[in-house]
Image (cartoon, rainbow, N blue to C red; front, side):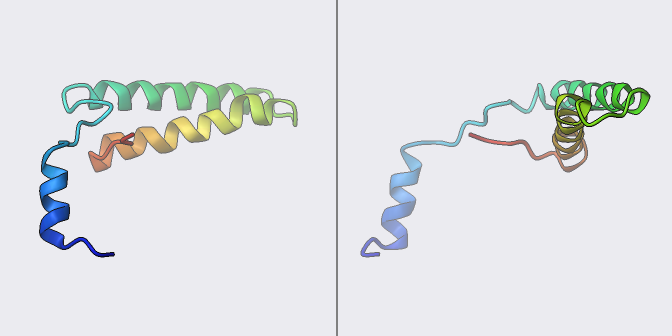
Length: 79
């Protein structure tokens, strides 16, 4: 790596970081993900079968995981 830290700093100043989900909407997104996760988890709990595992349980666990990250850590997934 030939570039110095100062050059990297100057290059980064030209392209500011813009999150996919703004600070104003993070709570709404987190609440929606948590509610979706709990409802899908409840639907899976009512009818547990191997067919419902990829259809309900996996999306429920992902929604709960990302919802908890948004809600309690205040950190979003940035692209």
